[in-house]
Image (cartoon, rainbow, N blue to C red; front, side, top):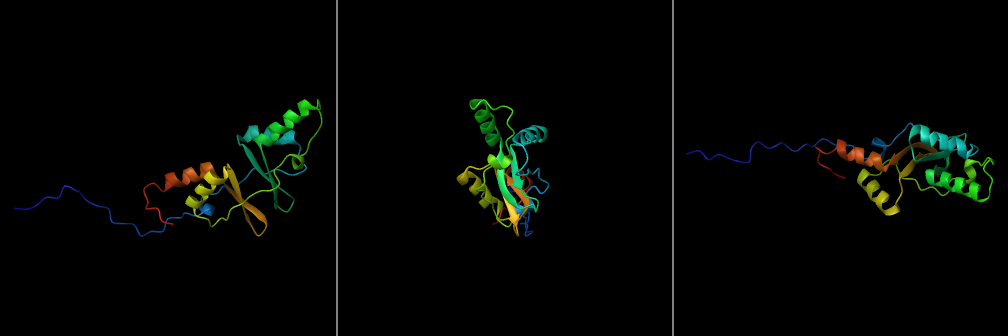
Length: 154
């Protein structure tokens, strides 16, 4: 008498390396802003491109800050409070200058933990002083969906 297995066929483990680095999932084509741009231009771009903020770079594409919707709202609020609606304010006056970056070679799961611990929406990636990309919380989620059928290894 033959014994039947009810487990069904098993997939052989895949030894294939799955890319898990930030650089493999970061956005490389970024909307960037200039320190001497007006905050009003930034607001227009945030709305046009449906983004919540972006890196601020100088003429050498070096990261000098980040400007967000919150920074722009603060500008609008201060302008109204001081009754200066027509005053042209520059990005450099409202951007966050102390910007934390992460390494493009960081594992995406470590990056996910960094998002949770630091409570940020995006992290720029800088190599040799130049902005090369940005990883967002949404990029991390996309990465996990693309890996759902793989074994996750660090």
